[in-house]
Image (cartoon, rainbow, N blue to C red; front, side, top):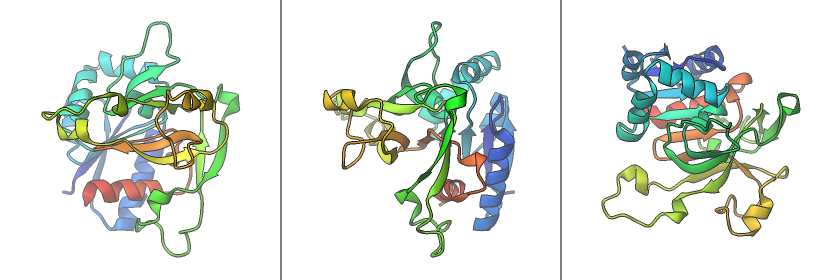
Length: 249
């Protein structure tokens, strides 16, 4: 039996992620087991990685707590340092801080040393799809000569963005764990639609691109990967293939 990858199965694109993972594994000729995760025992069996899909982040945190999974998830991400990918609400859950939270606050798993802004692009009816040039895919086996120049169709649904990098505010600790020392890698920004430019100009935001413009919509820090958008809602499996390459190499 091959390695096991789980998809947290409280809400969101669970089946869509599992389908994309199945196709990605087939394209890489990898034998993996993909399971739905709703318990600590199921989480523990995910020796290769975990996806936290979209949905509503406060519901996800409440469901995880009620199922006794919130602390095991934190242990999985921040102590065991297993590979994990969060999409949309999953990105919120994997951030250390969140702004624009509900009155009761927001319990998070953490792992990404950033602050995210929830529902950055507005309500459900303001959802949109846009084509992104994702440089991090260019060296993936998912990107052959015919698809190397193709943009990725990214679906944004009440999506968050990273509005502050927290790492730069921390001093180096000689006894820091590898994750604490791992840099936040900005993998993609969305040009335009940049609601945080004033904060960036005031020096309140870390650099988001060489040009210093655009909203952070994909990033990685150590074992944690996050995207604001929903790759599972398209037929394009390149990001799922890329992620499998990272965790199975």
